[in-house]
Image (cartoon, rainbow, N blue to C red):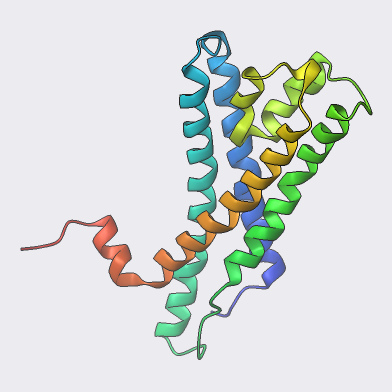
Length: 181
């Protein structure tokens, strides 16, 4: 057993992030008839962002568990401390590409049609319910910038937190199992 290539770890994390966005998009499309109520989009944003963050937490935790096993078997001397912060920033940057397309749309480069709007539910799925809170035809320029900031904050934080839980076995056991009296 040896340490995985950083590119492979990043691709796995990107896969988890894309899957989280797709799941958020599915949830948004299935909740679409109810998102006209004023409070439902806020609840939906919390759930879709939680799904996205949970999957990135899982990616970091799996990598942390593997690193802990390598360290326990004396195959490596130490573990990388901020690996998932940098990987999370890279994954968050990739997730910002569709937000940049929305920014170009908000600046008037192209108009948002129904097909573009439906595709964006799955591409920015973690925050797709916010599209029901604004008028996509008159999208404010600050909206895509806020989405980019949310991706660049949520992705590395949740992935690094998962990595810490995976590496620190004591907190992992306390988190997953009941303590015996």
